[in-house]
Length: 413
Image (spheres, one colour):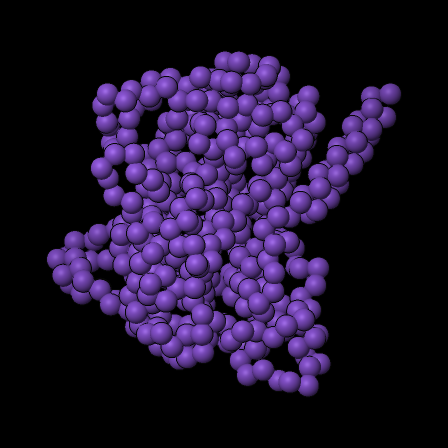
């Protein structure tokens, strides 16, 4: 049975009456693995522009403003040896190009020496550079939408090691990329490597809260019933944002590691220690940027259950589930987790979408709004900080809870 709960991020914009003309013809290029997301984004923009009364009534008619599709056909071909090339089948001269890239889509494969090989992040990044090279400097502007930042976890140097994320950002900006849009960066300070270029780090907090309300209508964001927890000290900024917006208490786990050895590229965790107020009887939102293997996340959830927590919701932008889904099935079966919410910004396997404990948060409409606004060269600050929308959402939810509890009291009476 298909159990995927899909949550749409934004309704139609309150107004698509832009007061500026686009900086150039809009063009969207989807790298391999991003085709489905690009099509959804494209449909929203096509519809909004068809309904834009300002442009309809303008005495200046813009060539290419209203189209059936803004997707530019681009192919990333592979030779039998594993080598590749990019070919763009159409003009890009003067276009405002947005390139969509999912560096973690292992569902895309290619043949090398007769073997079926899943694409690695390095393969996806190579395709990005090939497409930029194929554009050949003819575009008016290039923006890369890279939801999960390539090599984002290798953002700093702890010993004599590579600085992959900074090097990658510098490389694509040298090739002509003007701006990068990413979501919930592991450490947004990596933008310091490209100080003269645009770098937007977007939080899906509004979409996550909306998803929580839709999947659990009885959830209460009262401080006596709810708490936000960060699974480690590195994610405290993210958790503080959630706790502040929701007006609830904040807790944190810190990881005691064994720094005398390295396992799978990192120092193994000895224990998770909790810092925070009494959590007994409260629902808990565990906030992080990603789920990799998930072992640490489930250990944190088990610790919270041991401290008396009620329902545990895990909200992460990216669900990689590198070691499979079995441990999550077991945790759900044992009542350790209530639900896991991740966005559709990276590849989700068909098996994941069927899980009862999984909620997918659709970000296509939000990205479409970002792209359309940027193409009109208008401010996106209101989209990056949707505090008013969140407050209205919480107020409406509180009102609905009050009505529901009032109706239940009348029935009991």
